[in-house]
Image (tube, rainbow, N blue to C red):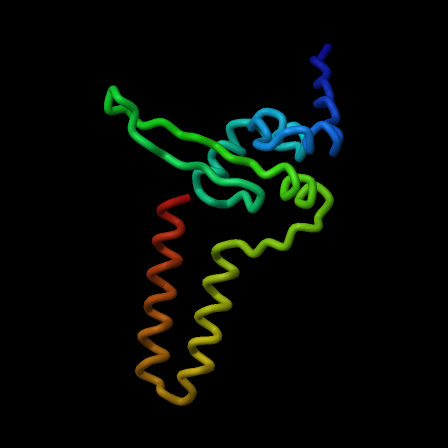
Length: 126
């Protein structure tokens, strides 16, 4: 008989709001993500409700510190936190620059080349 997967425990908004800095495991449970996924999202700057910072320890090793805002996490959980992904933001900025350049075709070609390079770089990073 296949093993039945247990549902993750529900985390209330009140429980989240009790923390000045929400622990990663609790934030992951609250939004239904895996803990490892959330660690990587924070490190990559892709979680709009928190961030991670990297520093060296005394033993010359790298260590990460995580900060998750309780209020922003609750807003994200309820779909009320505005967020634009890096790719969408890049496209928006390039479209606006292209519009500002008007009819200058050479500048537009250079801009499109830069955008293509950024897309390639983004694929390498992820």
